[in-house]
Image (tube, helix red, strand yellow):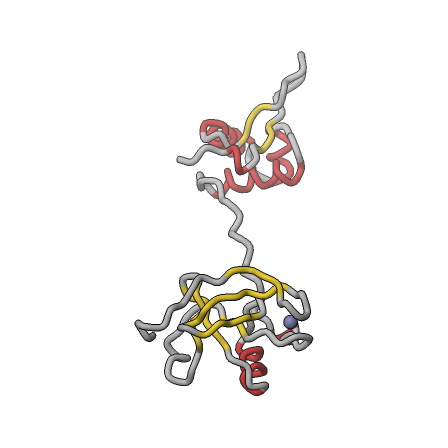
Length: 177
Ligand SMILES: [Zn+2]
């Protein structure tokens, strides 16, 4: 990268002609307007064939992808905006995968099965959990006690004279170890 040419952080804006959303910034001294959606390699190829410049978004700035740099640049690739010529949707980069769901701390395989049963089936009794999972009641009792200690399950409000039902605590309320 040249030291004497300025680059600025990209900003969201509107194309003054077609009014679609674009990102604008100065890329090493040259003003750039790019489509906001990163492209897949096929989309970059399409852009290059059309004679459009491509950029890597690096630390919020646009870095022109020329032949010398293209192999070393890592990051989302965006292409010069052309009014009415979006890169086909099939050639855009897939969206980021959703964050992995939070996991509760692992206690034991049996405890995991008990908790998953309660998540799926709702509050349940120990003996019914044992039947559903075809596990000895003692194993379920032990798992329930350890899940309760870990805050992963809780007693539902017991009605007088009713046996204790257990319910899974939502993952966001489970304390970390
Ligand atoms: Zn436009």
